[in-house]
Length: 577
Image 1 (cartoon, rainbow, N blue to C red):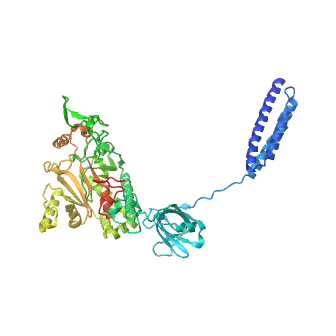
Image 2 (image 1 turned 45 degrees about the vertical axis):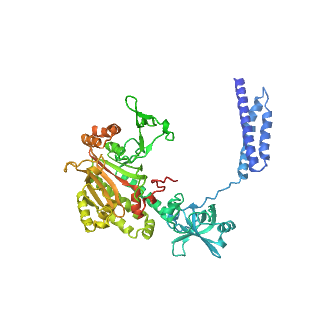
Image 3 (image 1 turned 180 degrees about the vertical axis):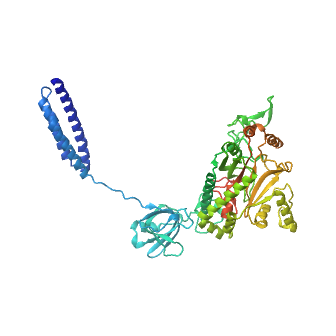
């Protein structure tokens, strides 16, 4: 038993000695690093432990080992602790001063502590004792004026001022104070300014003058730095956010429908084809064949990537209907495409659509929802984008803000199509020469001049025109029972300044009627088998509409050309950037 205890004591002492040596060695390194070479304490503790360990005897030395265990290790560990304390005292703790808080210019207000402003230089004015630098970070129209007194800034900032040019990016630090000028309420009393990115003035295409919108479209990658396009972008962002907020608050589910489709929602055939076939090598294209193997005109798209002809979608509506027939109320908000060879100010080849679909809803429900949505989102824009809308009212549309206020506060007019035709005929008869399209009758697809007259002159209000002739509307719109199917439950919303802004309908939920309409338009039922399934299995009355988002942007901003309402406009002959 005594031999076992002796053996156990030896093992434990050996382990303790090894641990002490290891700790001392590590601490010596820390101490040496902290004190730049002064490691005598660590060395002493290490040599002490080494000597104590050397007194161990291979056998019959229990008293020595016991003494080592109780006294020597305690002494060595004490020296290690002392070494650790000295190392901590010798180490200098370096604190990092936090950078000044960054402030967006739109949120700038008087501050006691220094803040950081980052943005692009609009103007530079130098005087004898100070410099004025207007910096815009894109968060607001006005930006902020930075005042740099020469006696309060460092030499580096003085040097940077000499290199400032319009368009360069900068980082300025200082306190926000009440402005002594009358153009702004606050300004930055800067103590430091650094150029982040230079901008050669002689080659920068945005000189400090007013450029035409046509010219700016040729430099679409830089035009967001102008007041007009930056303001459009901010209003567009606000409108997009408020649209999502409206539908979310109303309990709608957001559905992302596919951009690639085999279905022509509108039945007009104006779609962009999607293919991986080598169209540069016409001879290699697979040819369509009949059942006997004889070649037919056209390409066999069964050999293509998707195994059939595929296109970019013109609408997310059909996909939205599938989810409305399960979730109740849904909406889509995404890009759509139309290969329409139009060079007007109202059309784009790539544009965004907002498309809600509501189950157990008729046409009146769709009009109610569209009116509530527009009043909501325009109201948000009036509240949040006042500075930008004031700019648009000054330079583009004097009556803009009054028009928008009217839309929010005044109930929309609801006008049957037949009555709209009657009013137009009466007005055109007074002087047909004033009209580009004077021939108006039942079945006429209203032109923009007709739409705008109804909204701007006749009613001075937003106007729903509903119950359109069947032959000028899409196949999926529900036939009206009361007139034998001559019209459909469809509506367009016309607004002053733009014309048509929203188009919608009650969808045809009757299977047999829908199939007959598809056959009339020579639409292949096999391409729409899944759409027809919605009528086969638990069909319900449902309605929806589409809002052209860029048209909404042009309406709210008061700008004329839809090509200025989107970041990179796509239209016939133009797909730059």
